[in-house]
Length: 206
Image (cartoon, rainbow, N blue to C red; front, side, top):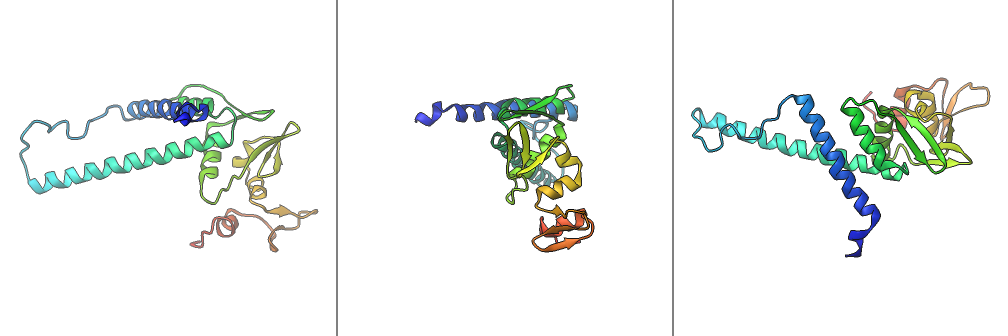
């Protein structure tokens, strides 16, 4: 039972509680109102077509299960941030607050490097890291410089906003005179999203 007192376990549990609470508040604000399932009919005899009522009942149950599954998936993805950033806990809280409309800044710490990143960039980095194919494999600080997938970047935001930078992170490189892009002996004169979709994401339905 000593694992219960482990600091990382406690931090993860606290993050789940805090972030889930903030997301719940965000959903409440965005929806304008929250209706408890079956609250209108609880304790009452509902008139009407029984088939329609049964279909509504099944629809609500399926909707609840989908909401729970989506919430769990988002929480799992969010907690993956602890493998990327040293101050992942505060980043999660600040990201959730940004989603509520608060003007907060996200300053990520990786080793000795501190960098400011957009909430959208934070979300996409964590999402791409949490995928099975690990599009983001690592974020490291070496000698005061930031490396993503062992590629040096001056600004971590360009990883998401600049496609050529993202292509380099996926393993594509430009030759010395930039005549073509090459990866695994595959060459292209220009790099496009459709190329990475096929050769990096395995999307053949183009």
